[in-house]
Image 1: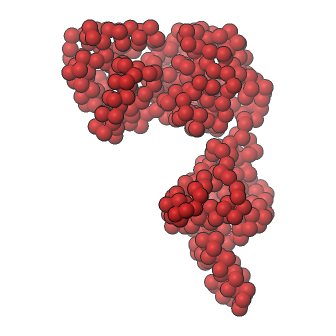
Image 2 (image 1 turned 60 degrees about the vertical axis):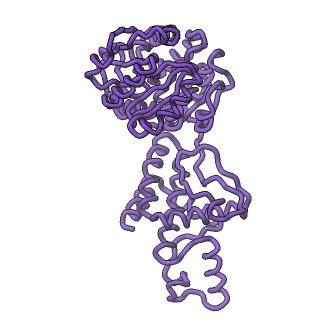
Image 3 (image 1 turned 90 degrees about the horizontal axis):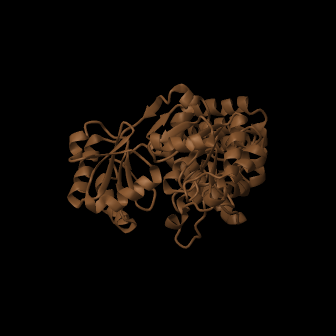
Length: 441
């Protein structure tokens, strides 16, 4: 409890008045504070007796709470959580700090048993008052399914703290996916989108392109925008600085070479299009059966290919990613087949309908954004991310304000805080920038 006391004291110091407001909110919700000597029937010492004592004990059992040490921890947890909730609504700096404090507070005040007890109390309260779950969360607690614990009970969503739209000047970094988000179906960028991004950049917002493509294949889009921006390539496996800084590599995390060699052997056995990425170049074997899929890839990315007779002879460096380009039906079948074998040793990602990509198991677009934010000293709460594909879901979920375009996949729509009315062919990115950066500023 010493750590809990330090965290709670830190909340009092950083968010003056939050504790009092939290206590008032808890009283209105019917949740009592920690047990205190002289008022807690479990401790005696002047506590109530007789019928009042029994009623109070019964009420505590109904709410799933205990007295003494556990009751004190839960009371402090609820008060501090309400304080964090209040802090999260006040601005980007406090919001980010609140998000950092919450896991520490929860770990310090409650063990697993205590946390489950608190969540059961919350569910029981929502059941009585008929409240519903609250949207997407910045601070989220999970609980076992109520249906599994109590057959017949209607399942309730966990209690969450709702994300709020960004305040003026809050967004300091804008992260954009390319295909299906920034780029139209013909792989161009509309003039309205270019104008909106240049206006945001003029206000000091860092524009970042985040794609599954290699860095060289992202350069034409950056030039089209007229913005010298950071690039996150290979679905988050590497990031590079702007051209003014020589496009130096800021970080990278390659795939294990053993995994890549096993996948290359599968590709040769089945004569499939298989791309190995090394030093900003694509290495591949020239199978005639795979030519149609190679042309699909070239038309989308204009990436430089180098054809070799035997790929393994050139695979002496761990790749940032490897990629199969096959028919959509075969891709789904291969995903199900290879997932048990490679699912733990890699991050298997389905992007375009024909693509099955393999990355380092700890790499995704959200990890790439987090790494760049740490390099630039920008908190994730000050990031707006816009995307459409399954591989965009991690960055949309991690960002302070995640936006899904209208044509986004269900996995992105589920985690996004907001969505655009327009799709990628009708300036969805321009709509997002105008609504949440330019007008907010």
